[in-house]
Image (cartoon, rainbow, N blue to C red; front, side, top):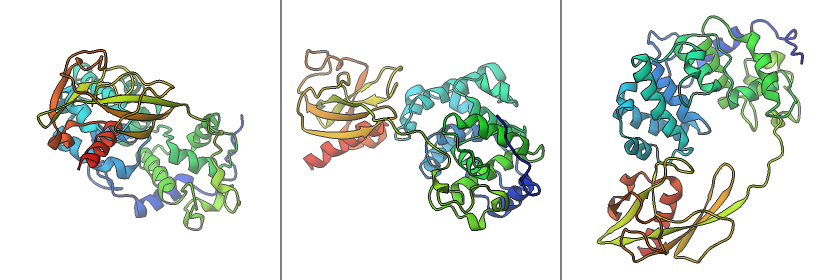
Length: 349
């Protein structure tokens, strides 16, 4: 594999950073360019974990609530699992919340409450992969790491006209980016590329005319620029079906805690059976919900049973609690179950 950089005009990093100094987004976890502030590794790590497969707009409120409630990594490490899972509810990809706790506790237990300052040290922590390790190392500690998220993939794939489909293109993108990372301001460099992809080199209708990298962008002016980076054809997702039980008593419903391992692990939820390929029964209401690898139709069935096991509600005896219906917002239900309870309550209104 050969990555050509000979046609790059002038100093790529200098052009990008000059644009970033004028145009950087104001984000709650970010230190502004040339600010006298010192990056907080905890806040940067927390934001990067939250931002995985999620938008800045979706994360901002969660980040504010987390940092207000748990302002340091030690505070988060001492938090209860159920409290953190409830605070995470609605942000999706719940394994990230479990890994968040495991990582915070490892930092406190094994590193005296201080994050390691190298990619290798960060990567050794629970739940931290290559991207997060590189991002925290660059932004928090000034390490010249090669940071590649979806926005940066798009910028580099277009700038270098890398037409290899993802995920195979990732190696070419990293190889093209590596020699461009400056020793000075590597964190700002990474954030500048993220901002460029989010605001100018967007998936649809990129604003090439005002891009600081337009002079040597190989894809500029191409009618097919929006297809870059090339993505493989989407595979059809399987469709599953499931049943949830509405068990109500004295203005409260019975909520259980899902097993720590598996989908929505550790989250409060309505009791119910396994999710399968065939609809099992009709119910009061149902919702459709998309997961990464499958779509689900979940049907709500009313059960007049106490919170103990029965043939009709085999998991009703799982660890659970009577939760006031009027205070369901505080239960921290994942989006799937919140959609279902909202639909039920609208029906009964």
